[in-house]
Amino acid sequence: MPPKYFSTRGHLLVCQGPNCQARGSVLLQKALWNHLERSSLAYYKRGGSVRLTESGCLGACSFGPTLCVYRHRNGALEEGWYAAVDFPLAVQIAGALHEEAALPGEGKYGPE
Image (cartoon, rainbow, N blue to C red; front, side, top):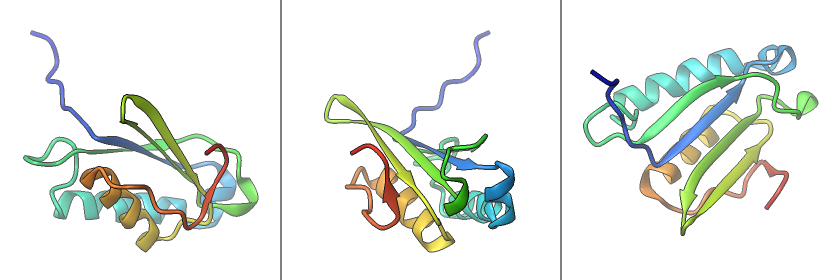
C-alpha cells in the first residue's frame, strides 16, 4: 500500500544552520510548528495546507533566522526568501500560504 499523500499550498523551510540557531531558529521552528498544529494549518490536519521542514543553511548567515517558502501559484513556482524572521512574521507567511494570498514583503530578500 503506498503512503498517504497530503496536498499542500506551500512549503516553509526554516534554516537550522549554526548561525541561524544562534539567532533563535530552533525556537522559531518549534513555535511555528505548535502554531500550525493548534491552528489546524499543518498539512496533515483536516483543512490544513502548510508543510514545515527544518533546512540546512539558506545562505543569509549574518541575518538569521532565515526562512524560505515555495508554492505553486498562477501556474508557476513562487519562492520567497526571508531574513531576520521572528515568530509574528513566520505566522504571517504561513497564513499567506494557507489563504493563497500574496507573501508579505517584510524581511524578504533574494530573487523576486
